[in-house]
Length: 294
Image (cartoon, rainbow, N blue to C red; front, side):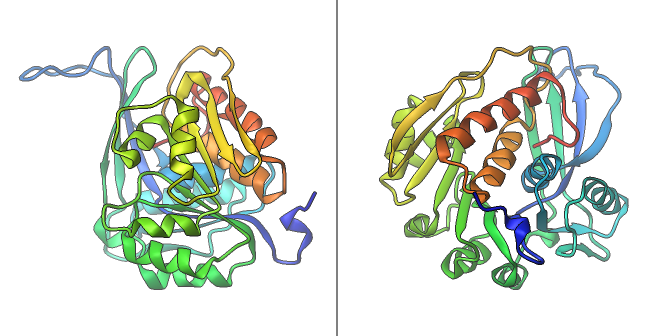
């Protein structure tokens, strides 16, 4: 089994995407039209898909770096400090002057379900020059958010910056569908799979097989409390999730992907990597882990 840290200066995984601040409030119920809902005190914590994934991989002992932009404001500095605290390499986390950091407004209901509104900061979106440097990074795997602006995603996928390239989320509407063939692994949840396939939410295993026909040789579809399913060149399968008390579903998918990416970078067989990732994702809903967010 190969560990990316064996190479001098090498990284297990590079995560390419967004880092934001999560503004979270617990509410007894969502607000009704014309009426306010009273919630808990507001908390502000580092979040964002790629940040969460990077932190999970780092907490599992991976050597990890994050490529993202934030504002040079208090939130941006808070994000930088949180990443440094867990050992994520931040040399490619850029703080942009006179720019606000993006935020996610999160309502968590008593059943642990989260309702998220992402307030993007356009000036912090990654550009083509931002991701061109990724090809020079020494990483065994790269994970990219496919919903980023299409130009930088296209540039990254065509350059194949690592032996294993993993895509996450519903691709941007303007991303050329044929680019999915440049992925080694596509990871989406059940609802994202339905959006890509333009159908209703399908059984996860069937969705994984259908997405595989779009080009990625390996597809993993997560299904919350029902675990995850996968299809790859050697077959397909499903992994059930353990029963856990649900405290907060926010970030469970990110914990899953951070764990999965790290294991795949270390040549762990896919079925085993998915089983471990399901455990991490399930644990995240039972105990709101550090920096598990949008």
